[in-house]
Length: 217
Ligand code: SAM
Image 1 (cartoon, protein in one colour):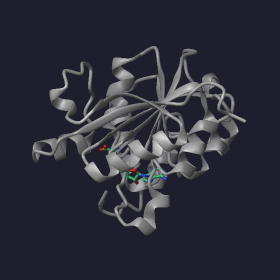
Image 2 (spheres, helix red, strand yellow):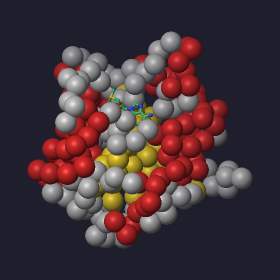
Image 3 (cartoon, rainbow, N blue to C red):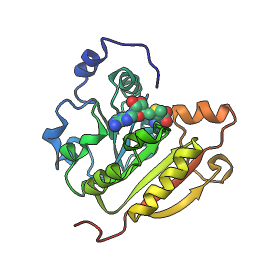
Image 4 (cartoon, rainbow, N blue to C red):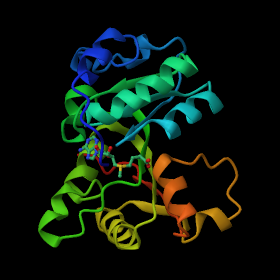
């Protein structure tokens, strides 16, 4: 995501520690204490400007959400949305997903959303794709048994790669759609990228991938 550099972004995020959690490792195993309601925890990795996760939090008040985004320049836009929405069931983290187990205990997360993840099309960059097997192992370590990954993209190459990666890892594939917007799915909440690319005429691909029971060592 190309963004204007915002040198003030970090400072602004520190002004809202109730929304952008500053020391996430201190909440490992205790995220439910930070939310008003004890509820399932869903996280989005690469949350971007936060439209999806904020609208999800509004639409599902009985679920707690955390949006995770590497770039402070981008996450500060998600913070603006959250300040306006004032939802109690959403927090943001400005961290890299490669360190997820530092922030979440085994089995603490119920679902992971990956929306329009960077495709990294060059083979030599495969390890950076958020559906690469090493990332799946990280997700497995923080998800409950039978936890799910819900994945959307307009990038056919990344989608095909991810289906194979999920399948090789032993995940079960559900609701695979090659044209989400013509699939009849109800309650789909669009991300910023989803709106941009579907307006250009791109098809949107989606699947749900579930870890089977008892795989964890
Ligand atoms: N999900 C949003 C959407 O659909 O509009 C943003 C999509 S954008 C192409 C991908 C985002 O993932 C970028 O903002 C990028 O900074 C973030 N990202 C990439 N790798 C990440 C990582 N390892 N940890 C956290 N965020 C990451």
